[in-house]
Amino acid sequence: MKIRCLLLTGSVAILQYTASQLSECVGLVQAHRLLDDPAAAPPQTYYIDQEGQLQTVEDEERRKAQAAAEKQRKDKGEKLTQAKAGFKAQMEKFSKSLAREDFESALTMKTELIESENVAKEELDKVKVSSRALFQKGFAFAEVARNDYAAGQLDELEIAEKNFNANMDNKDLLDSFLGTATTVKKNLQSKYADQWTEPTAAADAPKDEGDE
Image (cartoon, rainbow, N blue to C red; front, side, top):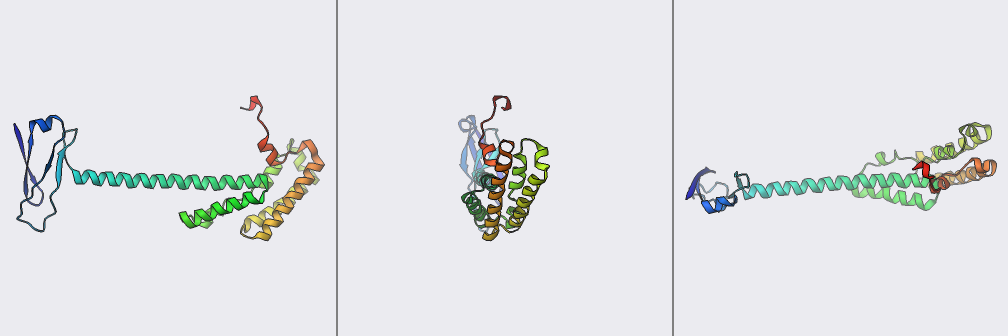
């Protein structure tokens, strides 16, 4: 038994499928184009898919290429999202540790995002140092942070932090911020002892079972 199909693809091509080919739901055959139109597109290879639909190998390859390109785009997008999150996490780490090397690592990540991933510098500049807020959260009792001495120390840190956040490429502002933050940390530790915990120590402290 043979099935004959007439296909109009610029000129008439005749495809023949045997019953045995159709029983496996996949049949390949070359569409032999009549040579009456030299300007016509080249012949295509047709097959019957598992749903019994006539398809072309060329269209299938095109769909695969498009799917691969879409996957590559999606993977690149996910990688970029992770890189941005990594930069933000590194800035948060620096805000806690006040370690110069942590900031240098964040700066390297920022530069990589700008130069290699074409991320706008203005977007990354929105990620700020937040040590002042972390220092305030370090008080065991919120009202202690509001007394004159504590508030004055936090104000000094806030001023240095704002100046640095306004221009994080300025090494002098970085030095000033780190110097102020270090001084404020020592003063709060000295004044409040166990009533204040520095951000790094708070982050490293083990959780109680009831907090999990």
